Length: 335
Image 1 (tube, rainbow, N blue to C red):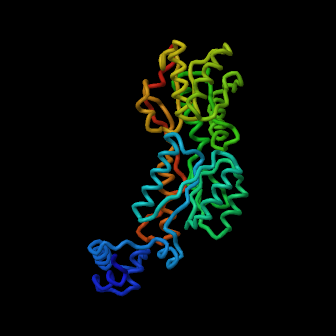
Image 2 (cartoon, helix red, strand yellow):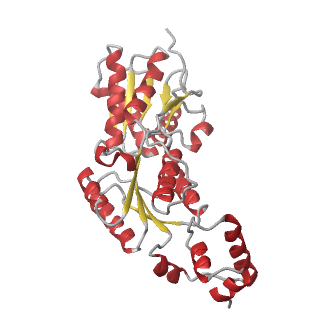
Image 3 (cartoon, rainbow, N blue to C red):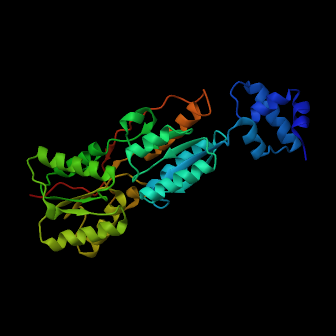
């Protein structure tokens, strides 16, 4: 097995230069880095990860906390972050918090025990105060899909209230006045904010928010089906339905078909997130682009720039505004 000394001799550089290349030090020129990498490839040299970690005081790994492991939303976020880090020679270690404060804290401690160089956190249950205190520990902390004023430069988020407003406006602009709403679980901040945006859009049109046209779901497809059936059973007329995410919108569309309700001619439906399957539903789902991929990439690039001192990384935005994606699931109200 080749040694670092043989790599040094083959590349015609010092041991220190080989070490800098292996540890991703940006002070090495591209020409020198290429010479070292070529020598390593020719000799079949494999750096010892543990030795690298001890020498550089870096594990070259980033802890990633997500709320759940299933679903297109979290899949998009994890995939984007992992790819961005891997392209820079870093690795993601993933743990799930399952939207429970104790489990989120346990997952964070697990990642800290793995000597991660930074944490990228999508946390829904722990308090702002907990995350502020965590940021004071000997770890770089970045937060996705949440805004904490005290940690503003480390937060990458969207305006969920604006997103909820735009979703309901899409129905109102099509002439609908009786608009039902399926929210996410209201202990989650994004669900509260989207509901606030829905209420704001109604109020602007002088329309009262009706509890009979409201259902609190859990962001899952089955919640969308249950919600639509519940609202139908209430006997209150409605011609449009706004859902706080695309999974629930998908479930509601299935329930509508089973009930013999045609979408969109008899019921218009709006989702939220613009996950991959939204454009493959029938009809194609009108929804809100929740730019989680851009947020995840920005968080990863912030880590590469500020933790690993990669000067090639661009400056990144913190706020990613939501936008309406108009497709086929909303039609003008027939008068």
